[in-house]
Image 1 (cartoon, rainbow, N blue to C red):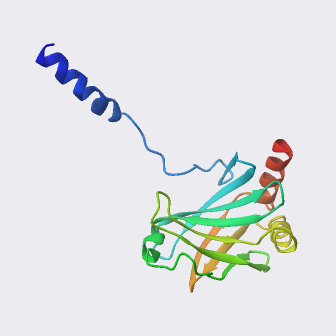
Image 2 (image 1 turned 180 degrees about the horizontal axis):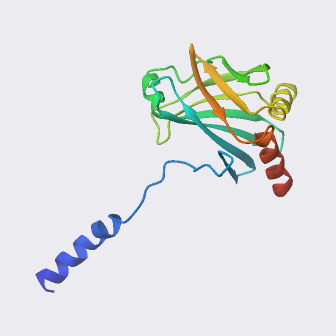
Length: 173
């Protein structure tokens, strides 16, 4: 085997990776949303800014088998919370532009893994149903957690997040 051939084989994976584009999460459509479905869960991502002006992503998720609703926040802000107790329950409130708000049953920080984020959940039943219904009349929301506010997260069309989750549920049920 020639040295040139061996060198070519050794470098080919590195050269191939130069054209690889790494994507950090979903990209918004014309309405400012990204819709996804997998493992029995519909997700709608929206985009906003944190207190430092950095872009962050909020993701509403709805589990189809029981209607459990959750929200997760992804972005550079999470670095500030790497020392947070992963077992603690942090109160989270979603505040809609309609004036209604929805305090979660549970919330916390998932840090130290491959993907770091803050999260909140309402649990299956009445609290999830009420928060889901509040999305129907909303065109933006903010998330308050641990003394911080994130957002507003906006999109085009009143109730569009609710509609996207509802359509996802209809398509995948």
